[in-house]
Image (cartoon, rainbow, N blue to C red; front, side):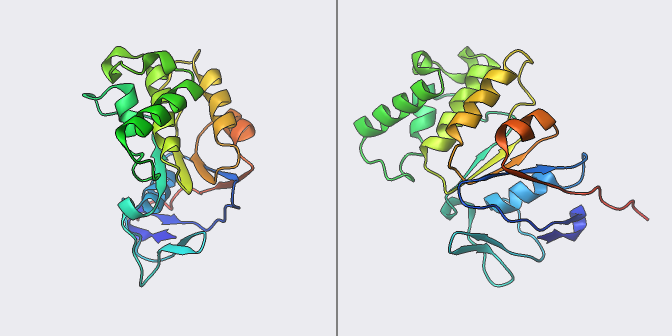
Amino acid sequence: MVVPERGVDVTFTVDEGQTMALTGPNGSGKSTVLSALAGWLRPETGHAQLGDRTLFDEHTWIPARRRNVGYLTQDPLLFPHLTAEANVAFGLARAGVVGRRNRRDVARDWLGRVGVGQLASRRPGEMSGGQAQRTAIARVLASGPELVLLDEPLSALDAQVVPQIRELLAEVLTGRTTVLVTHHEADVVALADAATTIPAPPPSA
């Protein structure tokens, strides 16, 4: 994958069901890589393959809504006007969950799995940062993505919450194909099966 205007040139492969950690200094393009995989940014050259589908190459571009990719950022980005349950239920149509009752049941099950089942009726403004991030994790995974993208998912949390969320991610990501961007060695050790480093871009002329 090459994005010259952002100084990104990287190649890596993630085995199915494994987690690849992308590391490197600030400005090396780690988040740019995730944006390209998610369909938010179109690289100038390169290609990405997910299973037997080409997400992009010089002839192909699958839009984000059709990629079946889940993206979790350091900011939970929950819909502020929706309850936790409604936030998780929002993407369940993509996972093939039909009917309001079924979506409610699946959403509640996922909220329970991430430890915030008692907060189903709360809106994001009524949650702590850790609770909101747990809800965001449930929303991403409940939709059944083929690929999970994590962009510094622990960096915005209070230090005392980080070990709990890291342990939760280690549990729920088992067997899921994942690309993790992180600056922290503890995240790599706890969550990743392999790692690759993106070097800093060359200095501007």
